[in-house]
Image (cartoon, rainbow over the protein chains, first blue to last red):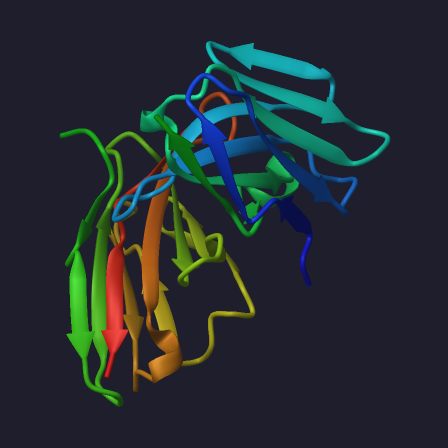
Length: 114
Length: 116
């Protein structure tokens, strides 16, 4: 059963542009929403994470927007760079009841053109 | 190196053989997780340990799969009688309960299994 749906599957952005990736979840018990970046041959690395008590979190060029009523959250990458080209995964978790198990979306392959 | 280490990085095995993977977590982390990732998909949770106790197993973890963390440090994942459908990247992650279950959540680079 798919609990976290991610779109688009792939994304091409020009250097300096804004990359936007969206996720939707079903389980209202989720209380932790991270985004991961994965390069080929490497494990996922945490980029930024948010909890449902805030609507936005910004770290450098990366921003998460969170809409609790719509059960959606998105990642915005400002001033996208070729080095940002990677696969991005959203995830969700019920931290306090399930000890940190992450449910991942299907991934978005981002390509930033110079 | 203070990251999560996985060994081997690559494994090619014949169908029906048994394989074992090892994960060494970050030393102060007490939680250890195993995930499986197939091409073009996100990681799927398999199981997790808090210290040496295995607290949850996914339905994906069939009877052919077994995981251990005997002394609460490194962990092993064994697959018996491998099938072609077991071909995937097997990822290990660790985290510390201090500050919450997600504190310091770090993935290793994975073991890529190919069953021929």
